[in-house]
Length: 333
Image (cartoon, rainbow, N blue to C red; front, side, top):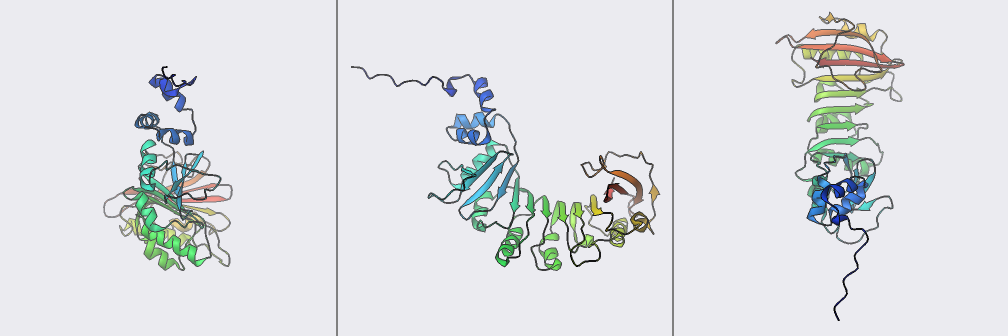
């Protein structure tokens, strides 16, 4: 008696034509797409053909795994070990039989992701050698450290990781993990960045920074009577640029502050002693940086042009405000 044929499911995805399959998969959530991409080379190519490019953020919060946030909906785990581990309930492992490096490469190729965003926090504990084995060769777009800690072991991990990882294009620091500003300057701030964002630093010297684009949020710290950056220091940085004594690749700097905490008449104090030309209220330029803090909701109160002595390169000092927030801006045009 002939063997009966295997029952065929009522619906088989791969029986659909290419464009129907592609359309259906495009409506799946990230986790389903990742799982499907591991089924075969054809399924991998199908998901990759959607040309999706969600933001992928790495969090180093496990001894035996790396947490990967894919877009706004998918929190996944890449296991660093072969054996079974206790998986946090909020995440899904995506190794599917691959080692950590191959699983990570698979994910990045699937979503056309070539540069990494790494988020450090007080829970970061992933061993440095395991991190290197997974991300080696990938350029780092951003490193974000926004959670402070008073525990020495946690601070030491953050310091080691900041010094261990390749210099990113952008570094955002909300807390200084070092015991002093001098240590932070020597270990981190002397590196060259495309963008450096400092949130509420306790101390800062603009001439220490080697970044093309700088953004600093100022706030009066407890037990402090003045801000870590005042009008005299900002004017001094502009003078250094005019004399070609600032970082030569510098392009923009923007300072955020509360109007109650900055010097009165800060605009006049910053301009005092500088050779400048006031620009009309409707002045605009193609090179003016854009973004939510570079216009739109903020009202510009004045823009002033200065020139570098050695070559006549122009730059603009601009002041803006919105409610109690004030902005000091200085950028090359």
